[in-house]
Image (cartoon, rainbow, N blue to C red; front, side, top):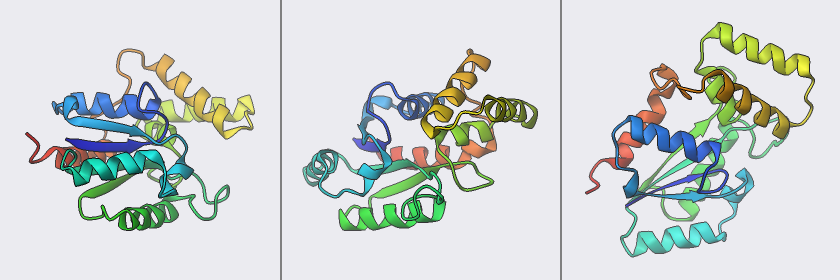
Length: 190
């Protein structure tokens, strides 16, 4: 078994849904994955949360052999310690070492490729053609939404409505790193 830790819950969240669809797209066996939804990003940095306790137990009992952390970069301006790609990278590496799972774990940070900030929805937006991206961004600016959570929810809903039959463009090269990390995660699993 392998484990994927992501934000939200382990059920039907945007993070979980994307990962499951990508696993299916790559013809990998989802049944070999135990998903851990850690809730908010801040939980990734709490050594004593139940998800980590369960994960460590499963690793020690050789139930889980590899782990992939999937976490949003978010923004430096709203979180100077954990926000932004570089801070997230540094802190997730630190917690992986503290949990003593660095060697059998990997990390993927979801964000806008150009700014190295944002979240899953920013990553998804970066995978669509520039004209469509501009249209969505213009709508978000004109709508004057103030809350990050509303912005994420609105962006997610716009994307789902605009692309109901093809929710993600997995052919975009921006998915290549995540695809490679998933394929590597599944290597050697029976």
